[in-house]
Length: 184
Figure 1: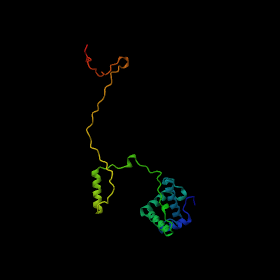
Figure 2: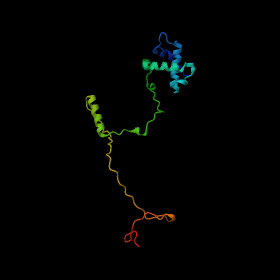
Figure 3: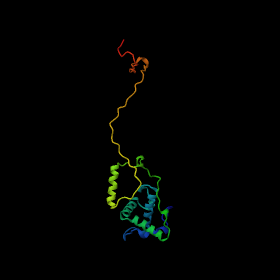
């Protein structure tokens, strides 16, 4: 038995909930396959990386896929939680959420909903439930701004700066009383 394989006491609780056909694998192989499936999900590796001691990876995948489609894992969890409850050992330690890899886009922090859309959603919820929503604090509504025509920006002209090497500069502002271009 490897380090993290299911112990005999744990297997005694798990084995009755795993389907074994009359012509299926020997019970020893079912335990190996179950340990191989647990190894794969505990390590996060691919199916092809499961050690050979648990059996061929394709067999493990087929067994997992069949059990998952048949709801064996959900039934096993329900049975184990019921067993823990019967022993008086149900608690929050059964709930485990690993948030070390939960990522969200920066824009997922809030949802911008137009007021009309929010009203329609509230109305649909009220109709579905058959009663008006209870009084709640006002919801922050984000309205989509109507597009405005593009603004024309005014630019200030700087006083004429003569670039080096005698290049032509843009004309600067005229002072009052000065002659216009071409005056001489």
